[in-house]
Amino acid sequence: QSLLSGPGPRPRQPTHNNLGTINGCYIPCLLNILGAPLFLFVGFAVGMMGWVGALGLFFFSELIAYLTITSFSALVTNGQMKGGGAYYMISRSLGPAFGGSSGILFWLTYCINVTFNVVAFTEAFMPTFLPQYCLPDKTPKLIPGYICSSVSLFILFIVAYIGAGAFAKVNVQLFIGLMISLVVGIGCILIGSAIRRQRRRRRRSH
Image (tube, rainbow, N blue to C red; front, side, top):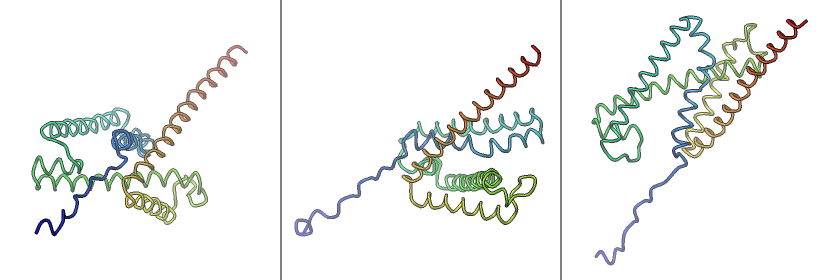
């Protein structure tokens, strides 16, 4: 009967995406760290808490990240890592209950992170390209701000729906833009400080 029925369906070949060490780990983490809230809300944090409080906030966040990284490293070294990422590792190592609760926390933190990034993008995009829809203090108006945030969030949903390949391509483009903006920003600061020093020297010489 096995000869008449044939060999049967072939097992599905594992699919591979473009999320390697650089595209899957380094670039997303760097984009998450150097996101828009870091540039827009650091001044607000210093103004509300002082530079000591802001440094304490950074230290507390780094402590949480360090504890998370060391915990994940301990879990990875205790067994063979397979597909599924952090959810697979937590559920297989610590059980479905703890894995499910950790997954819910992951989902909640990512939702909050997306909200902060979308709001920061809207606050930077609209005063630059759509100033007519902003208040005199360059704050986006309520309804146009909601529309801009909803459109940007829908674009992110489309990228996530397409798959990991689109995610990797968009990450590379955002990484290149971020590096260019950092180089231009730091270069402008250095050039501006050099010009100010030259002007001060000229005034002293005169």
